[in-house]
Image (tube, rainbow, N blue to C red; front, side, top):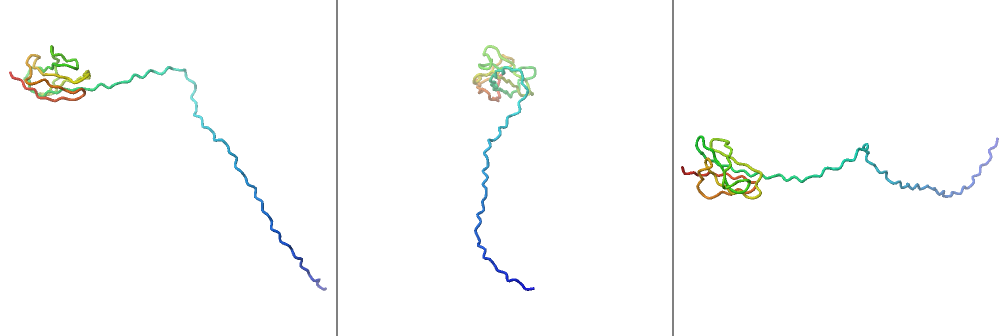
Length: 141
């Protein structure tokens, strides 16, 4: 058997254009997250908030020995004090007496007395509103 001669045909190459489809993302509005609603309640009028002003504490401390059985008093102006009648101080230890108030609207001017009769020597003492005054009054018996 005889072989047939093969002939090659020239094949022309053509550039093939690749087409790609562009996909445009659709703009979707963001979902709004709504807070979970609690079951409906009866409407209650809000309570009026009253501004609370914390009262400043004014403290007066006397460090003195007034003798056994005696009481230390204070007289003055401001914080419900009077020059006419004294208020007793609280005895917290053998040599320490205290008076504390939140009623001071301004500085407190005062003087100590033993048994609301014998005045301390020296000038009047002034305690600033909201401060602590510590003094050692001197008495002449």
